[in-house]
Amino acid sequence: MSGGFFWYDYLIFFIVLAISSGTGIYYGCFGSKQKTVKEYLLGGKKMSTLPIGVSVAVSHFSAIIIMAAPADMYKFGASYNYTMISVVLLGLIAIFVFFPVFFKLQVTSIYEYLEKRFDHKTKLLVSFLYMVTEFVLISISTYAPSLAFAAVTGFPISYIIICVFGTCIFYTTIGGLKTVVWTDIFQVVLVLLSLLIICVIGLNTTGNFSSLWKTALDGGRLDILNFNLDPTDRDSFWSYVIGFTLYWTNYVSLSQSGVQKFLALPTFREWIWAVVFYVITMEIVKIFCFLLGLLIYAHYANCDPFISGKIQRHEQLYPYYAMEIAGQIPGVIGFTLVGLFCATMSTISSTLNAISGVVYKDFLSRFLKSNITEKTSGRILRVTVVIAGILSMLLILILQHLGDILPLVASGASVGSGPAFGVFCLGFLFPKANAKGAFYGGLVSFIFQLIVFVVSKMYRYKKIIVDVHKPFSVSGCEWTNASLVNNNFIKPNNVTLNSEFRFF
Image (cartoon, rainbow, N blue to C red; front, side):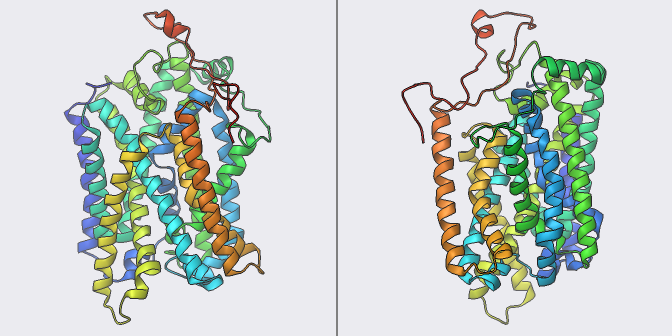
């Protein structure tokens, strides 16, 4: 994949980094200068609906969905598109269940609700679970596009990660929430434009939509009418609709990263409109990902690049496909990778800003003097951003060895977000639930989830459990290797290589 990056591609990349950093400098050194905690974390509560709704969306989907969703469709079929239902459901749940309470409370950290509803101990537990979730999320979000950039340019992946994280830490530290939101708006334009360019070029290269649809049907990629109730089934309707509705409801409605941006809006009507803009933006991105999945499969239906050794991971499919169809068009590859990094930078900056608020309000405020100045508080928030960014970079060293990106981020982040979601639901929906039940329920749930995650990854690492993918072919490649043609990499789904072994 190397050798496709030219000076103008680098120029595009560094212009985007410079504009993002410049936005942070503007809001950090001019204007209101983010002098108070309220300005730094909530934008002075003077933000507007469209930027907030779009910002929540772009920080949510990141490069993980753009890279992993088309690859998942190519590998396992289009069941992922059921998540379009999940986006609508989570929007309704947010508006009618959770957001009215948070709007009424007007807290800085949403975990303050748990202290009011239960006790301080429960608040600290869920705040900790939130940070575990977010560290996993932004680490994987950064690793995914860095993997693609390294493959195209030949740059060491560690240098790329440091460069991107360094930029995000810089402008988030200086500019606070206003910088995060307005860089998100700039970045989402680049993301959608890059997706549109590749889809248009792909359609011109491959053919019309009806031919794409027929190829996907013939290859089994649209065989998605699976309503099996077995929870171990990877690609059923229920695992996507129920699983992702709960998973994403937690992010948008019950995590600091999502709710903090809505708290920057002055009226509840504006909260509702921001949710509408969030849903619309997410659905547009998912439509692009679905079209990309069709295009990529149609292009490689007879010559899988993974089996033929052209790529090492299926997450590299999107950038590799972009290089093949548009590598000769100046600037397109640079723009494509910039789109991936824009989505990632949005996730990183939003999360770092939110984590700083949680650490400050939930963990440090009890130990600070009551008469602490706003200037000192601002310094604490900024130092927290830097430390959180460095810890996330270090976590990438571990997570890059744990398998495919989409299931990794869903399962890894759920270790923390699942128990947190349960505790919040207990508080919102069950008036008689008490603090002891909430704390120990959340703690036991976290331990159980952690065991499930570790054992599952261990089984998959040892090939005891193997997810079955759709068939691949190399019959149309220019060369033929009998051993590769005969190896479709297909193992029985969720069964062991040793039939006598029965896993838990």
